[in-house]
Amino acid sequence: MKKLILTSLLFAGTTLTGFAFVAAPPSVSTVTVTGVKSTSATFSASVNPNGSSTTVRVLWSTSPTSFSDSAGTEPGSSSTALTGNSPITVNRELPTATGGATTPLLPNTTYYYAIGAKSSGGYTRSTTQSFTTQPLNPPSSFSVSASEITQTSIPLLWATPTEKVRLVYSTTSFPVSATTGTLGYDGTAGSVTVTGLAAGTTYFFKIYGKASHLSPTAVYSSTGSELIITTLPVSGTPTVTIEPEKTGTIVLGGSQSSVTFSSTGTTSGSLSAEYVVSTPNNGLDLPEFGLSLRGEVLLNAIAPVSWTFTATGLTDFTYSVDLDISGIPGIQDDSSLVIVKRESEIDPWTSPVNGTTVTMSRPSAGILRVSGLTSFSQFGIASNGLENTLPVELASFSASHTGASVTINWKTVSETDNAGFFIEKAEIKSSSVEDINSCCADPASFTSQSNWISIGFENGQGTSTEGKNYQVSDRANSGLWVYRLRQVDLNGNESIVGIQGLFIEGVTEFEVAGNYPNPFNPETQIRFSLPDAGQVTVKVLDVLGREIAEVVSARLTEGNHSVPFSGAGLSAGVYFYQVKFGNQVKTGRMMLLK
Image (cartoon, rainbow, N blue to C red):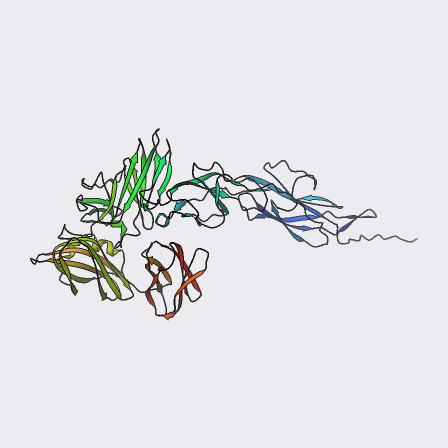
């Protein structure tokens, strides 16, 4: 009798059932989601067709129980058929602009998803997982470079978006959506200069967040950040109309300032602003003390600038004002500055900051802000840079250095019986730049020091209503130095009229310190520091990136450098300087005025 021995045979992608071979169902593993944005995501899985033609589909829903169990009936992103007996990585981006799903996902929404794979051998679906899309918001900050506003252009800046932004504007009111008004910008950059504008005109800008998915259906944030900005007028002061119960930020071109209303009354009105570069009349009629960012300081000096705001018809308002101090000469430490305020030029200055209802802050470099104000008038910048009201009215006093080379500059507004100035310096034994604050907080504390070193003497003008610029050069080793001006009148009386701390340290990295002055007309200095000697190229470009001039192309020594650039012969507007050192390139923006 013969025995029949049946041996089980197993082939890849098949199973033996009875005496019939049946294809194995596909397998799905390693399911993940990456690249999650506000309206899109990429799904990945490892799928093994197990020898049969297999279709893969992404299943998703805002409900964890609404999936279909058969591939092809649930809306999703399908694939071309997969074949083979080895795992294959499958990636699907949703939404997609060509084929499959074109409807974007919803921002800030939790989705449940799975990967389904179907072949003649059966259907396999992964376990359900979840993810949450990113919120879609306007940029976290939205501002204007007020000093660079012209009659026909406005430079806007915002926080670099995680996806995209869309900027729209109008001359009548804020656009009601991202697709209304005039398009100013659509993309991924963090700034733009809107050109082709009309002089003396108010523009209402609104910026929205925009999803970066590839679907032809654009998605924008439901809200936008707003700015009201006026271009420079042909003549007169810029003026803007304020609607009833309006809040938000207003920038009046040429005023070097911005006003943000936190509340306004039920009546409409207007606001105008004037920025004047000269020492205010009765400028030194100051309060004895004022509250600065560093605390209470003695006030003996007024900066040669002022801002005058005139409100008409406005009632019951509260606002903050940002004052741009970046163009004021001689400022080395803005933490000791005090914003002062007065009703008119015949009134004495007051210090509105009390630290409770009216506060002071520094929102960004070169900007001082006072919040909680309820009336408009004239503003000025005071400090403790002078010791007394003297026969010489000093507009500015500063000390700067390039390496060991020190330049001392000062400017008078007027002089009475002025014989001249002794320029002196003293070394403070310290290793910290922060000690400048303490060493210069009280100028009187240095008048009796015995270690002052004389640099030289500069003759004065006697009596003159015209100001004069003075400059003296010096050299100093690294460390903390204090420079002072000792003024002598024709009768031999002496007074300390200016004192300035200067910290000189070795250069440790390649840095670009900007250009000064900025804005400029027609000359400015482009400043940078080199940690080592090397080849340096400095170029100036226009807004289209075209090279305007090559300022420097040479091997320079380690240390601080300042190279001059003249805009004579160029049109007014925004330009960029590019400083290249080795394989490092740094770029800055500058504004040429005419």
